[in-house]
Image (cartoon, rainbow, N blue to C red; front, side, top):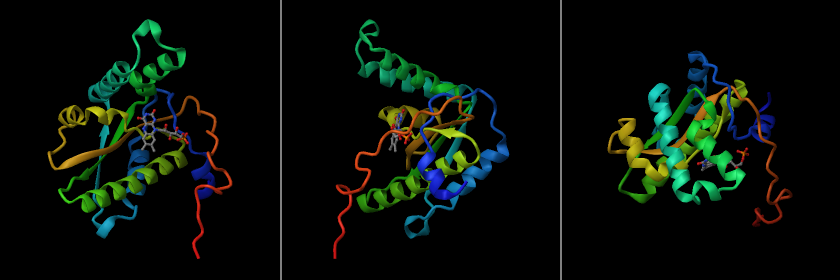
Length: 191
Ligand SMILES: Cc1cc2nc3c(=O)[nH]c(=O)nc-3n(C[C@H](O)[C@H](O)[C@H](O)COP(=O)(O)O)c2cc1C
């Protein structure tokens, strides 16, 4: 698959087969992440590969976050129920990958570290897609980042940048339309 096709056809997957993902595939994906550009070449990302009980607990936490922001169960729309089910189960994906970076008291350095790790995370998503695997970038669970850090034994000087389930897709969503497909609003050419 060529790169532009991969960039344009990758989608956020929210339904997975429960099949295990071979370790060598996960390692290839993490290698692609590790080759991202980084501020000052600090390569300031780290990844947690979470399975089993802790993966279940991440889903439980995300489910609680979603549920507490929404109306009482009987007043929920079917779309809200579907989304809550996704949050609670993480779409039945067998693996969750968590991206961490070093936090920093200096806002510029902190931003640089976050950007470097975001670049690595996008590499990870695209590499997973090239391996026939689904992902879904998630920051929703970070509403309870401190609890997540405790659960995953993340050091004080690290922050969680994003999480994604990882697994074989059961179904892909259709592509969301571009808000400005001819880029007439989003791009300004300055001479
Ligand atoms: C920074 C960021 C945070 C996101 N957080 C969540 C999330 O918490 N839960 C979720 O279901 N999707 C999340 N998404 C996925 C977006 O909803 C998705 O990328 C968007 O709807 C476009 O769909 P596509 O990825 O299939 O192109 C996030 C994506 C990004 C880039």
